[in-house]
Structures are given as C-alpha cells and as structure tokens.
Length: 224
Image 1 (spheres, rainbow, N blue to C red):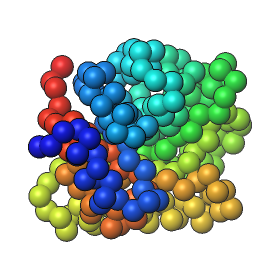
Image 2 (image 1 turned 45 degrees about the vertical axis):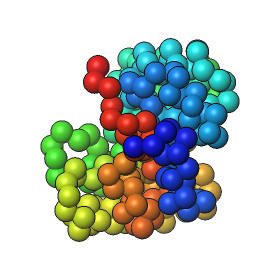
Image 3 (image 1 turned 90 degrees about the vertical axis):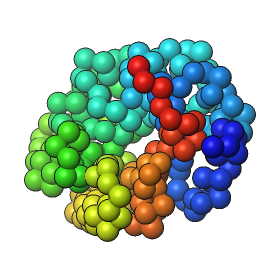
C-alpha cells in the first residue's frame, strides 16, 4: 500500500478521462482527506449524515460532497444545503423529501436512482417496475427541485468476475432504457455510477462514468 497520493495517481492512470472518481472518505480522518485534496482530488463520498456535515464544516469549501449510503428521509435536511449528488435514491418518498428540502435551500439537488442488481438481499435498491412507477407518477412530475442525473448500483461482492460483469451489464441496460424512454434529450441524465475498489476496472469496461473507491486510496476502513 503506497501513500494516499501515490494510490490516487495509480487509480487515475487506470481511469479514462470521462470517468469521475469519488474518493470514499467515510470513517477517515480529516488529515487523510486533506492529503487526497492536496493531491488534486475534489470529489468525496460519505455515508453517514452527521460525519458528512462535520467534515463539510471543517474542510475546504470547494470539495464536491456526495452522499453514497442509504439515506433516511428525516436526515435529508442536514445535507440539503450543500450536497452535490445523492447516489442512492430508492423510493419516491425519499425523492419528495429531497425536493422539499431543496426548495427550502433554493437549489436543485442532483440524484441517482439506485437499482438492485446484486444477489445479496442486504443491498438496497429498486427494480425496473418500481422505477417506472416513480417516473410515471404525478407526484414525481410535480417535483421541481430534484434532478435525476443517472443510476447507480452495487454488484455482488464476489471473486466471480463473470457474475459481476453480468450485473454491471444489466445496470447499463437499465440506464440505456431509461435514457431512451424517459430522459431522451436530457443532457444532465448521463451518470452510470458503478464500481468500487474491488471491481472498478470491470465497471469501467462495462460503461461506468463514476466509480466509488475507498480502501484502495485510504487503506482499509476504520471500523466505527
């Protein structure tokens, strides 16, 4: 394991220019984030609201913060003033709450729809039918301050590369179908967020535009 700076450089060499790197900084101290920041990284992902709001207050203001975990509706208000992208929208209820808080903060909040593509039951996410139900609902059409900019999903945690690759292919198909059926001509609908430390190269090969990488940059996660 090299330094944070070396790790970042190595990963960026493997990523095409159009793929955005989200450095997953959850549980990591500010010093680690500053090291990555000083190496040129500006996009960071957190999965705990309290930790994210604290880091937002304490760290440079040109950081683009992404919320990457399962987000509870009652916590949206704390990150609505500043969050750049919410990765894991898995219900209409959550979208409506994000919209309400975005209005209060006079901003539009970008969101990704989370699809369930893994075999593991523990992963959150929507299926195609539920996504269609959301996008065709009058409730969704009335939302003025959220913008769906793409989809995200997590593959099964396994060494079976064929399986992971198939799951990424499936998410790519969902993305393409949504683009042609619901977001045609919408240039902001462009993100296919898939791929983490253990499978990001496979994800990029399958069309990912955004990867979420933590341990390969910062070392193994500190357990809370």
